[in-house]
Length: 482
Image (cartoon, rainbow, N blue to C red):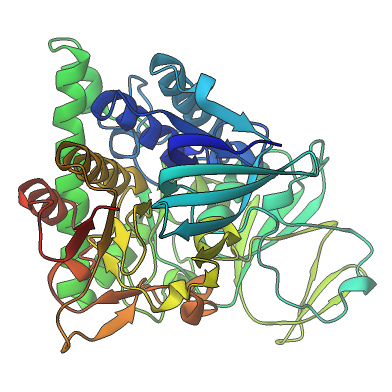
């Protein structure tokens, strides 16, 4: 089968991939691009996860694209609404006609002689070959194949059903059942209030607590502004306000962890039943060592107040026939056990990366401005913020990479690669979070530097200024012609 050529190939048709394609349509309109998507639908995370209550843990005024206002009253949206929003963006920018569904990218090779990427994809058990001058990885940060589930002793002894949220059965019947959700992260706090209405009882079993913060489901200020201002103005105002508030609170947590901890605990105490054991909401780590969990309208707390949900902090000894035996000796009875135990972190979706046919160790590369990677030509990888909305960084990455492409076209360059010229540069992990899902794969992730454009700041305003004002003629970017 003949090799097809494109100017740009995007791997992934999720929130990032569709956003990147829209940016190319806007800022590089003459480029012929192709999106290769391994699944059969647009949406990525928001199409893959179908568990009850699936929703964003970031507000939609910042999770939405900069160029497409979020017009719903909901500040926190559910999966179906987000999927619809992504599809609308794809329709508006005619992205759909550039997508090949069921095409999983398995390998990419940079050919120095041709200054092209050779991309291998699998579709219907056939191997297909493509070439492109540029590639963009929009595969997210975790494996879509399966989530992370620890080895639980006695798993086969349990007579009920075990479910991981990433592989949620289409018609799981949990009405009138006893359910135990293992985990205390965003997935757990989303599942529990949604399922609590129909179950006999649902329990969140956690080894250690996470920080949880109630947030409004609807943005009343935005709703009032819409009465007097155009939608695009409202979107800019609320987006800017939310970015500012999120960054300010993050900095407060990092600089004054004890004060932030006390603030979060006091907020939780006010919405929990009087006399509730606050140890279940008192993490051992400092705020923002791990990502905070947002609870829209305090729905988790209402489920606890009504007696339909409970939180248990303990360690699992083993699964038993009728539930889970804890180290304390207590047994949690269950008909269904949900293992909300996290994701398998994986950058680039497991795509094999080579240069001139030789393996390239991606884990030893430093990120350049969070856009490109040291030693990898003509390529960008979209990885959003860990302390704010993913799309804020994705928009900046897309805008910057479009500038690089246009500069190369104007000057007739065939390749560009980030190069570190500072021999004193030291490196650290690409992700600063202490979350278990990050710690498990820290050695499998690329690096960031400790200074300059090689350092990731997790600060939208700082990145906006840096990336907008920085020249794409920077000395760290090495351009060349064939």
